[in-house]
Length: 506
Image 1 (cartoon, rainbow, N blue to C red):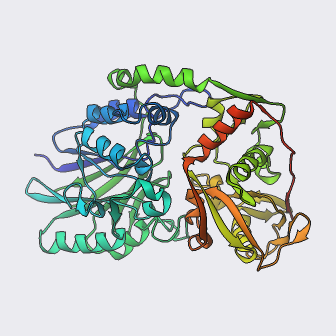
Image 2: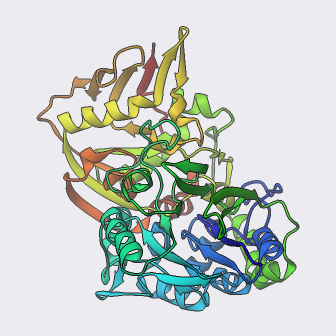
Image 3: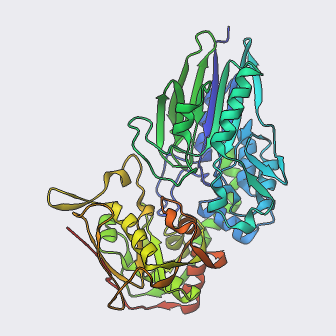
């Protein structure tokens, strides 16, 4: 007799198919090819396979495809059809290439779009929920996408898309599924994460409404399990009786929820993608992958500056000149007074012979450029927020552990050019910016500036709510990596004045 239902979920694979890194060609236990083998080894008649979004943006492979043949079906969609997903839930990055691209992708996967709070022209793209009856037990499944997509993706990519509040949708739907449908088990697939650590209750990253799984677990009665994503963390456990999972990024893990239909027990787990890669999946992408590898080695320009990141701690503490260059380009292109850049964990930097490979490894996401208008008071508030990245411990400056574990969040530390400032780490939070000048003159609260930054930051993500209501002066339809690439190609030889405008002291 069948006694268990298994739900398997992938999330945040970001267009990774092959089991190696694009940055250095080293092997990696990740990607769709390995997941295919793993899923096949676990699949039976009562296994449900779901992808939880962020599949068609975030890798060199997908960036190449959508920059050279955007009107064609991406091979990632064909890979997902080969894996035979039952359901898909869109993630925020899946909207980056616009409406037609996303709809083409969803239709081609062969899976049902399961998202109760995502609408296209006022209509859900698939069922609000599904009911599976196994051994006389009703299993209800529904999907949600973080409504903060509208704050993270350029508005011209979302013209006919709209979202309702994820928490409110879940609360109403679970009540309906328990009371009207009489579901025995209710499982939510949520492209969003935890606003608080499920083990300690401590706040995590993410703006208001971006990650709401913690409160869903604690406040929605009748929820059996929630399978999350978005934050690229590995999470697995139970919170107030609700089983939860989050399988990191790039396809390194497969999330699993097993439900014992005899006892009602829910068991969450994360399964590493350590199987041999599936050849059929790799063959689907091989032709375009060969093109990608040649494309990545395309030379763009030259420089004599040291723009390699060998020590990530030092690159942040002393501000790598890679940041100076990027900010200089953003200021020149946008005409803004200031520019802000962060370095993701794992950024390698640019060789003296700059190639597309090194550039793609510098920018993990293709966020558009936005210029905001702010005053000195907002600028100070912004810098105080960045200063939370640092801590004083035993007479030394260290990176705040909440930016280090369980996943590195280096992208939430911005470095700003066009001003000079000092962060005194031993001072209380909110009082750490001890000096703030522009061209040697003190910055006053009423002074006005324009600042160039990624759309992700301009919309307040990463906890930078001070930018949400700031006036938008300019929006560029080109992404920051494309802007930097075009600049380097045009100049060929890159030279600039190095700046040491940020001091981080005890």
